[in-house]
Length: 469
Image (cartoon, rainbow, N blue to C red; front, side):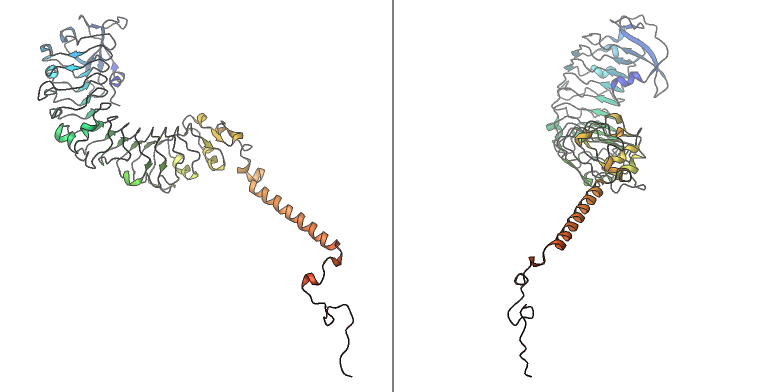
């Protein structure tokens, strides 16, 4: 979402601008000129014009006099532009979307954007920018009061000028990812709003790979309209506090070792991603119980996650309140999955269990109920026991799981019990036979502790009658 390429893919091309300029061409085979077309904007349903100048080895920002007067979208990505110099030619230009990603821009004149007051979309990602200071007090975005989307990711910013975003009152999406800004952004809990002037209207904020490791619990408190928050590839060892308005949260690539319910108490959250975390070893009971709106859960590429508890969502049942539509547990080290999830799986549209070392025993036999729900089910294979290694779970038959079908093959435990009982019967029968056949003198009275003296009633000698006649 919000990727610059999506702008052009979603538009339906309708007519072509008659081009008589030096920069534009309507012929796709003319490689040295921009491809200029008209399209229908699906958001406004109004016609707009686009100049696609991507990948033309351009080393200087073109003159607007060489482009159609009513150009709305200009894509100059993947060129060799190094400096954005000020120009008076753009003073009344209609440009709304400007894509300058994948250039080598290292400097921007302070008044470069002043002539583009209608700009709503600006992509400066993947450049060599390290500063936005045009003067002691930066006014670089002073005229961009209509800007909605700003992407500054993949540059070399270590800090940003105070108040740089104050003029951007309409800003909805801000991407600062992949800049060494961690120390700067961690200075105070109010730095986004008070120091930089970031609009409280933000609905999407990307702070990926900024070397962040700790944020104040109130860091995002002011942003109550925030819907999407990305915090990938930082150094967090816990789940930071985020606004209750957040619907999409991505914490992939952090140092989190366990997931617990006390960190996930967000009733609006619809999508949660917790991937690429070698430190993750445990999903606590009821970890996702409070996520009543959860639709998609992604936990992938966590090599030390060996178990997905049967109580991760609470007591999974037919009447449970949590009904995710999509569950992705691919490429972990999970060996088994409890059959309590059968009710949840029946309501899901997609489940991805690929590339886990599954132990193919009776405990995962229930997975064979599902076919279309399991994403690329042919890649769900057994790791153990050895006789089933690398076999597809859904291809296993009753003959592979004989112990799971006692009504057909008998249960292994029953077979063992029968063998033990038969052995005991044979032993006892032999012992009785031996005792019957053994000579009677094999036991002496002394061995039984019996006194056989002359006065003993057990003596074999006849007893004298001492009675007086």
